Amino acid sequence: MSPPFTISFEARDIACERGGRTLFEGLNFVLEPGGALLVSGPNGTGKTSLLRQIAGFLPLASGRFSAAGAEAATPIAELCHYVGHLNAAKTAMSVRENLAFWADFLEGGDLDGALDAFGLAPLADISAGLLSAGQKRKLALSRLFAAPRPIWLLDEPSVSLDAASVKRLDAAIRGHLKQGGIAIVSTHVPLKTKFAQELALGREHAA
Ligand SMILES: Nc1ncnc2c1ncn2[C@@H]1O[C@H](COP(=O)(O)OP(=O)(O)OP(=O)(O)O)[C@@H](O)[C@H]1O
Image 1: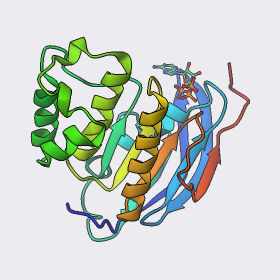
Image 2 (image 1 turned 45 degrees about the horizontal axis):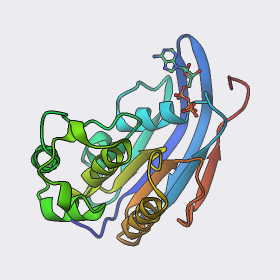
Image 3 (image 1 turned 90 degrees about the vertical axis):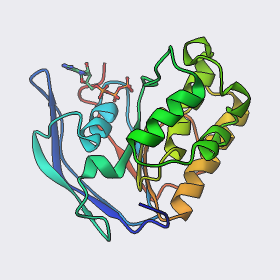
Image 4 (image 1 turned 30 degrees about the vertical axis):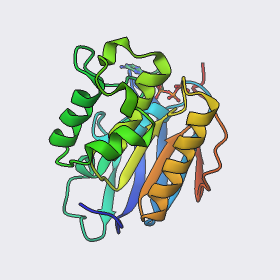
């Protein structure tokens, strides 16, 4: 699937239960191509859970997600890149091998673009296990460029990043939106990215 993207994404009447508790219910939003959603709320209100539901890792208690546009027949999970708290890197493999794995697995192939996206080219032959926390996060984010996917799900993507890298992340999200991509982002760090909508999850289950 090559940019520019034409997918729009709808969440209708979404509910989430974890450990027998209802975290949220009746969530609705629509994102057009180029739209970004900021998911906010105190700790424990379900930001990660919502992103994991969209990525297909967590079942819906009710509701449905749907996509419309040229690639709408593709399962939602295959339209998404999910970058969560875990960096999903194989520690014994080099940076390049990790990205090559993802490019292959996601049927992409822009390995050089992925290595350049967050400045990892000089570290290409280092084992991922030897990277610093910030470098590991950059490796996880570089996956966004290993294969084009229209919907980016980013859970606290700036954690461990230095100021220059946060700017790079911000610019990467804006570039994705310009190509018609969609970004759904949970962040406590202010970004220059213009979020079309904000979804503030409630406080009743905060801990
Ligand atoms: N596997 C699980 N079983 C039961 N409850 C869980 C499970 N995983 C998470 N929870 C609970 O679900 C709630 C929401 O967690 P979630 O990680 O989605 O919140 P969050 O808004 O992303 O929080 P934070 O801002 O701290 O990252 C929390 O109360 C958490 O304890």
